[in-house]
Image 1: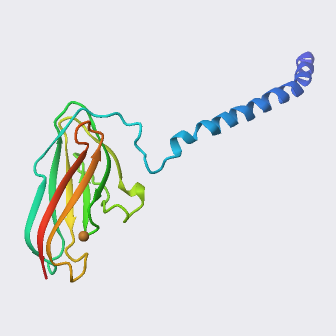
Image 2 (image 1 turned 90 degrees about the horizontal axis):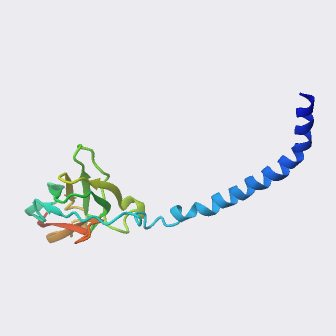
Amino acid sequence: MASVKTLLNTLKPVLFLAVLPSLVIFGVIFVFQRPAHNIEPTTPYTDIRISNSSVKLNKTGNNFGTISQKEGLVDTVYEVTNTGSEDIFLKEMYTSCACTKAQLIYPDGSTSSLYTMKGHANPQDFYVGKSIKPGETVKIKAVFDPNAHGPQGIGYIKRNIMLDTNMRERSLIQVSLEADVTK
Ligand SMILES: [Cu+2]
């Protein structure tokens, strides 16, 4: 026992001198290796593989016909089905104008937040980060507010909703809506 204690006492300074610098070196390596993943908040999905799947939409446009500001919001739902054999990753969603909001409805019934026009929210508010599995259908619900532009916002309107994906062909899914807005 005594000899072990003596040995430990002798080694203490050595351990201290060897272990402490090692911890510092590992700490430095750790800190310098990390930023690669955290440095680019505006392009979050750069390491996502391209998908060979494509989609089928039940419709790409919706004409509301004549609508009135008095009656307020109108909405429509587009269905996007993955017809391929690989997952399709959904990167970002945004609309062409802040009067139009878009929401994703997933197969399990859960919903995303409301996406708006670029510049009208923080960059990360446009990120989706979900996948459509082969055969699955995700719905895009678009809501148009005929009062968003004030009393002057009457007449013909056309708005687009964009969903950016990792599909090899035509990675941007775009649907539109039209209406004649009256008072
Ligand atoms: Cu608008």
